[in-house]
Length: 233
Image (cartoon, rainbow, N blue to C red):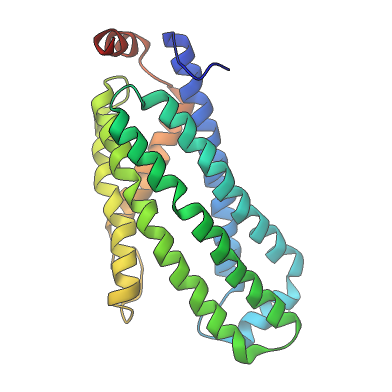
């Protein structure tokens, strides 16, 4: 597959591939998150130990699913970059930087989660809360970049002309959802991080989901893509 998109049909295919990859990211990430919610109690090491020892396979599946999500996420961003880089090369490059920076942070932070599992097998509940805390705060750090990448992505979608402008607006607004989560986690840790205390996350999730669905089903407006590329050249 050529790196350069030369025809409207190729742009549509690229968009649909991006949408498909995005849906895989959504499924693997949602599964990993649901497993964490089911098995990890960040306030009770004894309960967490019981949950993990009774559901070892489920934990391992969720753990691997999280690693797959982050890995596949890179390819999702690459196909978006390929589709949108001619709109504004600076913002497209900025988007990729914000995608690549959190990858090693996320993967290393997953070791904190696996350490909890190892400690549970060794019945060492005394240290489990320490690694549970590290894992949740590591997640807050990753959320900085989960938020930041949405702003240049939203700008590119808005300026593209071949994707709905409303999606671009929602993505730019949605970037604040993850950034507020980071602020809540480190500056206002007494506030429980929920959709009620951070309603921007609702916009964030809606924007991300709708973009994936639009790319998968609709692709791009081929007439507008051709017009935009003619203007670029």
